[in-house]
Amino acid sequence: MKSKIILSGLFLLFFIVTVRAQTPFFSDIHHFKKLDSTQLPPKNAILFVGSSSFTKWANVQDYFPLYPIINRGFGGSSLPDVIQYANDIIFPYQPKQIVIYCGENDILTLRKIKPKLAF
Image (cartoon, rainbow, N blue to C red; front, side, top):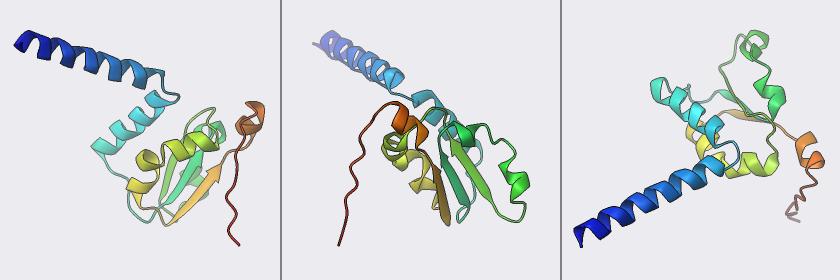
């Protein structure tokens, strides 16, 4: 009985690791979490999140020296990807402002984003 529980647990662990490894941008998000575990970025910062344009903007802090900046761009992402990882790379930081840059990848992959309009 005990060996069946251990075997089931190992299978479940293997399944979770395999699924997460196949999730788009999982390694990028994991990298951000690892950075945050060594030094959590300041609250009330300006958060830049979105596609590769932010990833490649390595010196963003130089452009805004008077403001705390968190750069969490991950290459090739689209708006649904940013939404999917919001609990990992937006909400924990409690940012003062959020700058989102997405669009080209949404168009390139022909993803349909249906906005919810409130009147």
